[in-house]
Each structure stands twice: as structure tokens, then as C-alpha cells.
Image (cartoon, rainbow, N blue to C red; front, top):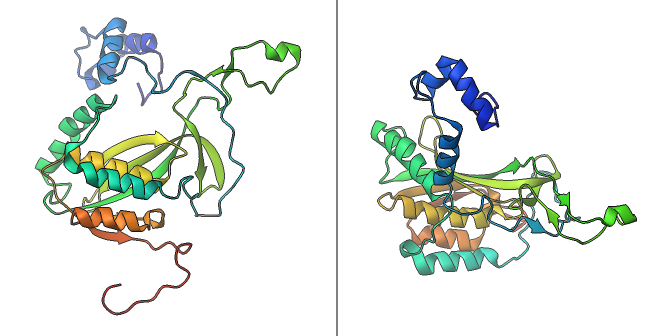
Length: 278
């Protein structure tokens, strides 16, 4: 469906029944393809939440931030102490704390069908001394940032009302794209990948709100990674300058992970090398 850009289940059922090769590639016999109801039942089992969204559909409009960053410089987190708080929470609970997520079933499928098979084939690297790399990337959504009007204020000439509106993607918000130097409406995708893999294979993908800083999303993603793969040992972690913060080094040190992090010029105006590796 994704490859052919088909978004309608009805259209996809018709396509599989009229083009046998699509049924075969999907793992079905051309004369025995699933119906519409089977797909919707399958979708419900993939998302472990009663609502398709994590937040309420009706909310006030989101205002685009006015402060902009510079070229290749990511915005600073709104709360300067958020990184330290997240690290302290992660170290306090360490391996024992993990709250169930709505996407857990998707992670189970990803782990079973791809990660475990890749480990068996030896294309991820040594899982007892794994080298990983993590970074965030922008994911724009197709939903409108201003939502759909639910009131009649526009009929009276009020186009700037504060009434609740309906959002097709209420979990999204505004984030700063440092590469394109613009704000975007959507999500932030944080992926931990195996840097020793000849194919840079992803290990753990995780979606967050676009407004969250990369350092914060990395802490949460790494903490969840240890939950899903408790038998793995991370040898080294490669990060960009957005993660150049003392709490990040502290977190990696507690897990005995070597930190390879690009220095952030905004945090230190002058770098010196003392010959001892620092």
C-alpha cells in the first residue's frame, strides 16, 4: 500500500484481487486475499490504545514560535534543566522502569522480524560491544497546523477566535529545522542505528513531538532501548553537537559507554587539547 501510495483500504483490497502479483508479494494466495474488515481488525491490534491519537482531538490552535535559530544550529530546549532532569530520572529507575506505550506491538514486530534476524546474520555488529549512532530528523505531517474550525466565529467576521478546533494530527506541533532554516509542523524522529553495520541499519526508531530537543529525545530513546534489548552491551555512542551536555556524558558513563560527541561551539568558545585525550 505504501509503495503504491494507496491510502484507501477498499482500493487496496480491490487492487490485490485484480493484480495477483501484489497478493503474492503480500504473502497471500491470489484466490484468497483478506477483506476490508480483516484489515481494520489488524490495524487495531497494531496500536495498543483506544484512540488513534495520544492527545485530545479538540484543542486550541498552536502558534508558530517567533525566535529563529542559525544555520546548522538547533534551537535550545525551552527548559535548560530538562536534560539533567531526564538523565536523573533515567538513572534513578535504570532498567526497572518502563511504562507501556501504544506502539509497543509495532516495536515487537520490528524486533522479531528485523532486529533478531539481523543479529543472527551478523550484520548489526557485536551486540556485546555494540557501537551505535543516534540523531533526530524532521518529519513533516500532512495535517494543518491551524486545524479545522468547529465554531461559527468566521461568519461574524472573527477570524482570530480562541475557540477549540479539530486537528487531524493533534500529536504534532512546531519544530525548528536547522538545515533548512525554517519551522515545520510535524514530528521529530529519533533513530538509534548500528554504526558498525555495513548498511547503517536502524535498531530503534521513535517518534516525538517536533518541539522536543534532540538531547531529550535521545535520553528517552536510549532508556527504552535498554528495555527492549536488556542483554545487549553498548561499547560506544556517536552523537552530534546537540548532545554536548554534561548530563549526557554522565548518563553514558553510568552505562560504561564511550562517548564520541561533537563539541558545541556555543557552549565553549575555545577548545584545548592536553595530550591525555581531553
